[in-house]
Image (tube, rainbow over all chains, first blue to last red; front, side):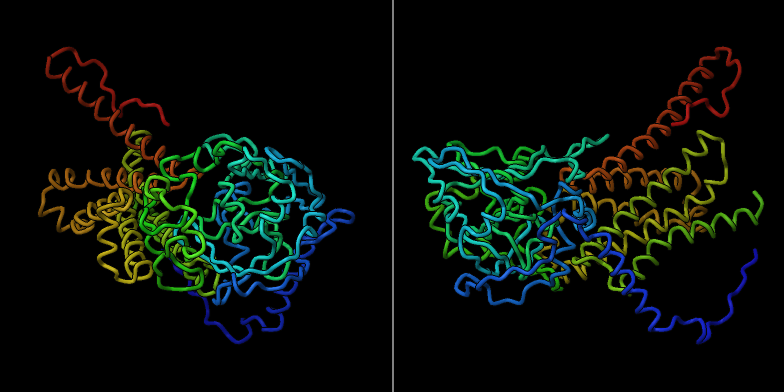
Length: 315
Length: 220
């Protein structure tokens, strides 16, 4: 057999550093062109700055996860099941114009335009930890205001006991919502839910931004909810409807695998996912696993919500 | 088979099997291992273990269905590469993922069925790798060696179960892998059944008629 040996490298073969860096810039520029919304399309381009005052009392003192990691490693099944799918495909989602219907068992149902929703209450920045049910976590500076501020405006009736969140259903914006040849995914639209007292808890954040900017599409633009003491999938993204209801909502993951994902899904190191342990987690950017804390470290604030409830049964 | 052809084929297998590792090293060097590098590396090595294992299991069915002889020359090499990748996969799990947290890993092996299956798959590949040399074939005798190496199918089943049971709802590749394995096993079982039936007919002394050789099986 003949194996031809390539000659040794010479200095001439090495790409000049300036050229190499230029190529990088060119690639970034090309990517920006592709991502740039067309004229008259998005009034609020992705990445626009959003000012908010940090709520120090409710913020972790930890260094936030890198912005790049938080925007390229996402679970957003509407774009695909792989972590990199949302960042790659989220250009199809149009966060403007956008409306959120807030109704159900409330005295004053209303459909809010997203810009009105943004002005409804003063925006706060809160550094929360986000624990994914898969065993990793991030520290993210979210921007938003307590969901309670919105719910109080629509005045839930005495019959309302739960709040149901619905994500946009639009296969033209969410490629993975198109019917596929084989395999079952979640049932669309994505539905999540909280008990009314959980939804009214001051930690529950109606979220419109992160890292000082409006929410990137892959992180659930233009508006999502963040429930820091629950596994990440409870924090529904790209919301179009928030509904007060009397019965426990049929949530997407619970319907897909009821024995694995309960309605509560509070972060709990003592209750394993049936197929893997929840005792530890890896902070994105760290090497060693760290122990997972009950209620993701928010036990002091939220444990009282579950007094008398068997959390092994109501996982 | 001509020696040159065999060497060319083996070189191609070496290249194809080392390419995923080379790509992984390149991505590591350029800082392109996603935000969760340990998980990405573990999954990539696991994916390639199963793919190469299935490729090695496809060699005999290729001979059965198409009457080709060259795939057999690649079977052992592919099997050894599958073993190589599973060792890397396992090492990453121990060192990078759990950093020698033996009690926790032990608990996971016992409590998590998908890890149990993965562990059994790895264990079942060890005797195969250990007896892969020509000397070992001679020492065991061809018959015993062949019988032992049917364990490769068990490893395939265990590996597919490992993948099926760890995958989250909505993923699909685990089903494709299981489907491929089912086809490969189907071909072998069909082959065994045909041979068995023929032998019985011959033993009964019935007129054998035209011998079916190789057996006519429809390609998948």
